[in-house]
Amino acid sequence: MNTAVTSKEAILSVCRELITTQGWESVNIRTVASACGISVGSVYNYFNSKADLAAAAVESVWCDIFHFSENKKDFDSFLSCVEWVFDSMKKGDEKYPGFFTLHSMNFMGKEKLSGQQLMAQSWEHMQKGLYMVLMSDKNVRSGAFDESFTPEKFIGIIFSLIISSLLQRSYDCSGITGMIRRVIY
Image 1 (cartoon, helix red, strand yellow):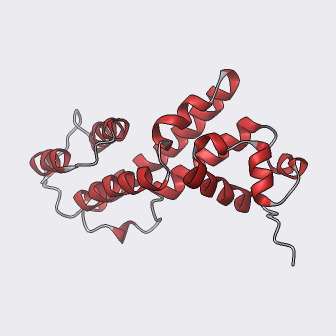
Image 2 (cartoon, helix red, strand yellow; image 1 turned 45 degrees about the horizontal axis):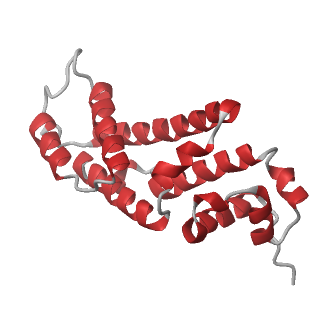
């Protein structure tokens, strides 16, 4: 029976497993090819360069950690969504040790721009998910937002606090959730 990996998603799954077991440094063409049971050339059928592989692996890990379901009813409130994000950050840090701080250092030159674009896309997806949940939260008090303090600006502030907590590896969301309660409920 041939157990060689033969799809892009299967290769990315192996990359996630390598990051979990061997760290971010293990994501290179040769190591991934070996772990997949395929030739180096086969990896190049899916990824044009190590940078492309690394960028796709980063995006895949971000999606694994922070995938928002298309069903906004997964959360009964914006608060429960923010609590889920912090719980996901903690679990992601445990599952992918050092990922949050190390992957950004992997991109150089032109590759850095591509990696930053993928990260920006992942962050934009997360912010859209937060916005979707906020807008469906029936408990948000009337008048919480106006022309100068919009839901979009609020999401930007909350997301900045989330990223700050992520970089500090601080997964206690009680301060942020306390602030949210005071501002919008």
